[in-house]
Length: 302
Image (spheres, rainbow, N blue to C red):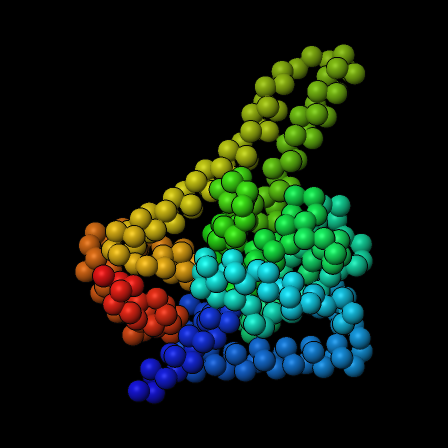
């Protein structure tokens, strides 16, 4: 009975956007939640007393720039429908300082205690859309990061976050760029090719350019292949869950690690998945929550 009550309480936190770490016990989970609440309380106290706070020594946020609840709630419908959670904890702020020309927003957080802050370009204060970004989509995207940061699993982090958007390209190819170096290595060979071309033309020196063209295509090809195989792992697991009669498939996949998706994708029968689910729910709080929230009604899992 005690375990059932703990799982039920943890499920409510999951619904609010706070998910257990892989392998985390209920005791450790609630201790981490307590630490998280303390971190949020300290943040709010400092914000109220000083009017501004430095977040992770990177960004300065001000109380006057807090994103209103009605704007934050724009993302709730998307995250609720896709993944079964809505933000009730993570504060958001418009960033009024110098930002990149194409920067729309981001989430910064600490996976150890779940503390996180959303940051949006100040242009979204009055506009629901700026350049190629839609405010509610961007908020939902960052809230997915805030929720999944507990998994510490970057392979499909961008994939799940980009599913909140409408753009075909972002939903299918957004996961190509999962590390900071990906964008640099994607564009750097292009500049090398440009430099080699200018040197050959202006220096009146002949040398073949095809090696530079090959270099330019290698990393984009790598990114596409990596994305293809990562997304295929999700799709295989998704197909199996649909075959097994699971109702809220996307919500279940969202809470899985990369290795768990591989395991599910290889399952042959519904019975094998049922055994997997029962075993994981007994041994791990995260799967206890998944079972309680998405498999607790007979009509959801036939």
